Length: 145
Ligand code: DQA
Image 1: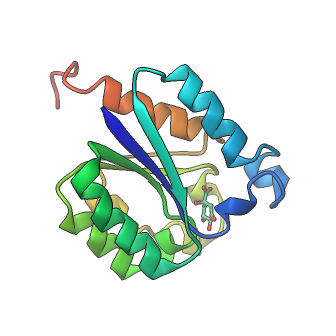
Image 2: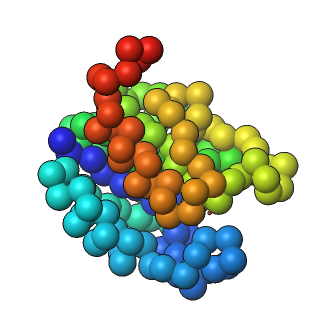
């Protein structure tokens, strides 16, 4: 199983950026932990601050990966283009957020990703990524799928 974690704008500053909301660990450090924990999965990780690049990465991923774990960050709430890219590809996308976006400002309640995501995990800190990975492992075990 090959999964791609894709992070959008400002998530390169994890650990430094608003630590009370996003924690004080860099994503690179957390990603190493994930790779160790899920050593039976081929995990990749990429990040961009640029909307068009994020769209390119989503499109490209469909050729090489079994699924995407996507934290589109602020573009979640603004980008029809990123939402359309998720709709356009035929591999599952699980939407992830570190914070509970529904407990925050109203503008963070809207997501252009969710309508076409397989599922959404949010509000569990960095653990949201871990739970999203587990959702791929549990696939097929749920009779309601
Ligand atoms: C975020 C939530 C977004 O509203 C925000 O713009 C981010 C991070 C999260 O992971 O909690 O950059 O996606």
